[in-house]
Image (cartoon, rainbow, N blue to C red; front, side, top):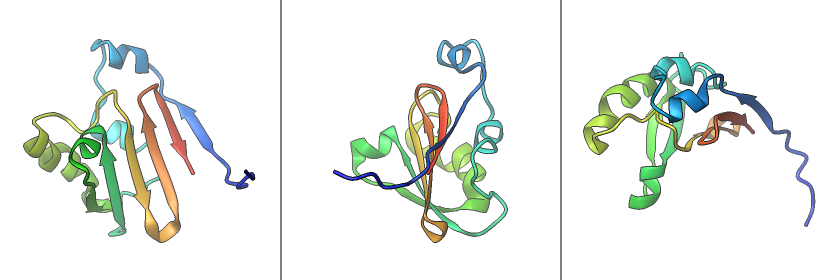
Length: 110
């Protein structure tokens, strides 16, 4: 086994515990803007939620359409919000970046 040298950046999401308990709600924009995803470009993103693992598929979305996908498309497919206290993984192939909203209230960036 060897070290990769990849630097893991992380940030704790304030009030996450209240979100988990249903005492606080985060807007889609509020959480996604905490990541380093550029929501202004047409760059393709691969979006993976816990539900994607069940169905063994992921979604490919333009980053400038991510909020629309999260607020409209995803809920129409799964009957729930994309942003909830579960894991969310965003892979940005063009800049070789992975952003993750972790179920323990951390945003990690690789």
